[in-house]
Image 1 (cartoon, helix red, strand yellow):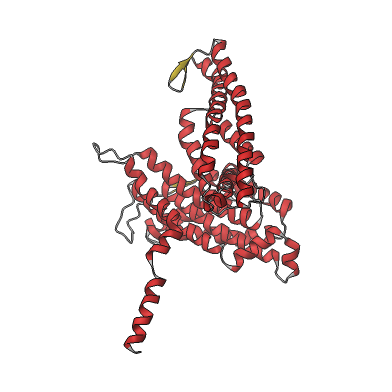
Image 2 (cartoon, rainbow, N blue to C red):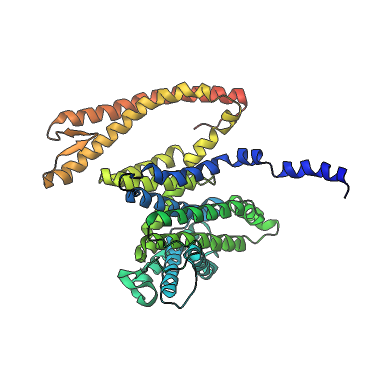
Length: 444
């Protein structure tokens, strides 16, 4: 090759690997990774030279639930399969990982801790292939009912067959097996957290790439129009089966990370409440957008870990949030964000700034009033009998007086009426901007 040809080829190669376009396309993922790496250090106690155990544990749980919710969305969001037993594959992957760790500890197996999530993934994949062969013969309501029965069946097995499941006590293990590719002991929770970050990134990228494959496209086609996909020559049952098996693989990775974090797996890991959590995280975050379950996982873990320390009524808030999303935002939080994308691209987001600010104050009144009434009711039925004093928003509240109840009611009802008025005004602004930029009448 001549020197002139090399000079002509060099700019093309350089342009193909340009960093600038890569950063512009994927800046949000890089920003999320940077935040995940830096967050534990924001709560670092420099005087004692240690991380906050609560924060590291909560962030670790977020990483696990992100992988779990995304794997659930491979069925619900991408293939249109509503499963009520998805926790089965997280739990079974966790059990497989616990037995593998014990085998390594006993010297019967060589496998570094960094690769243990693959054991969980392969365990979830194996069980998903066996169970999915039967389950994916049906779809829609029948599929959902079968997965519910499957979840109850595996939960019962976890209590009966102690050789694999360990009964009620579960299977205990120790992640400090002395085998590591990086020379780490994984005795510190921060080391496990960064391992979770690495595998969350790997699993997320894997599931994102799957959405861009022919399998991902056909899963969407079978979700949207089952008969047409079958008419053009594809087997929807096989598409469901492969998608189901792969979702079990990634759920198994989440189960392995769960085992490495808590060093024990019990029947709770395969039970229905965890499957319900996957549904909540995915639906609240948004089933129609890939990053929706990530948002939902972060919100649900915050409610379970942080809000539960502040209030015994945190489940009420989760339920109300879910109902609100189903009624007013079926596309989830991510769906609301995507509705704003055309306005952002048209450079008209400034026109929505003032209307959103006008919604914030009545919205805050509604939230404060609702929280106050829920906490008052909860305290009267539980806290008062224990001789405790109610503290809300940093102030001690006298629940034997009608005044706090009246204030809460006024905030809720008055703020609701005010919010409804401002919502009408916001809708007019939204429709006007939509007409100007050519939106098809979509509204948040």
